[in-house]
Length: 113
Length: 113
DNA sequence: TAGATATTTAGAAATATTTCTAAATATCTA
DNA sequence: TAGATATTTAGAAATATTTCTAAATATCTA
Image 1 (cartoon, rainbow over the protein chains, first blue to last red):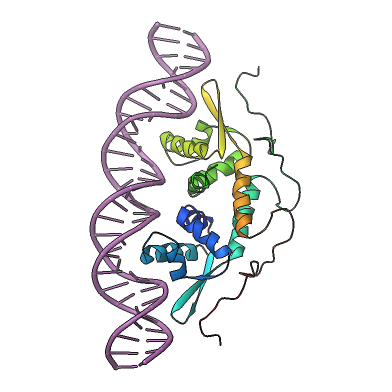
Image 2 (cartoon, rainbow over the protein chains, first blue to last red):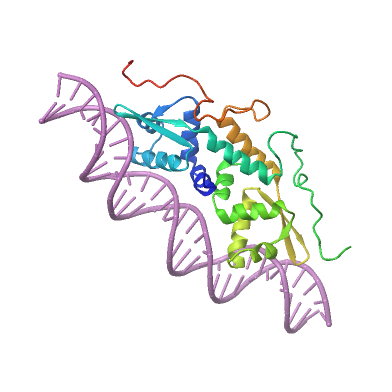
């Protein structure tokens, strides 16, 4: 999945809140819209962006369209982030200290002290 | 860290590429700018957004300003994503099948079959 | 201190995103 | 089939983001 679509989709607070709502179970577009102080077309637009990023899937059931999380893409993002940290994501606790994980070499201050 | 700043920062491809560059070791603003077909002020702007999200840190060394990754915030994002998946992030392999992880209850199609 | 080098700040122009209203589409029910 | 309900599509207005040029700031060296 193109990471750009995924990160763009995740960059909006309304969309992230929609993802949280879907964590509790699948919901119709209307049920999702009810939770926001925003029109249905606006929510529909956000759902579409999440769908394009494959963060959610939709299924029509009668008049309703139900949305659900697609967990595989979340794992791709987690993988991307672990990769930045030079970690496999499977083992090895990450020490909490800033900038101490990747330990390639010290920066050169051009002065060689 | 406000997740909104962090996700906004991650939503741009240039900024994500900068993060990848810093994975290899710390770099000055000029060294970063060289890798892009973009002016220095533009790169400076991107670095500032990454800094506001605390994804990078900067230290002045003489005329140069060196940037480095701040791994702690990456972990916050990983935690946010794991949370959506209802996982601790420490144990339990996630099954790959879409939508099968969170298994609250089936959706109601209003027809009760 | 004057000039050179590295980087950022200011602010404008182009582009992208968010949200709205109005209208279209899909499905259900009487 | 007609009307009601659920949702999306179209397109406009407001706002935010990206990138640029010009100028400012900070530090170094002769």
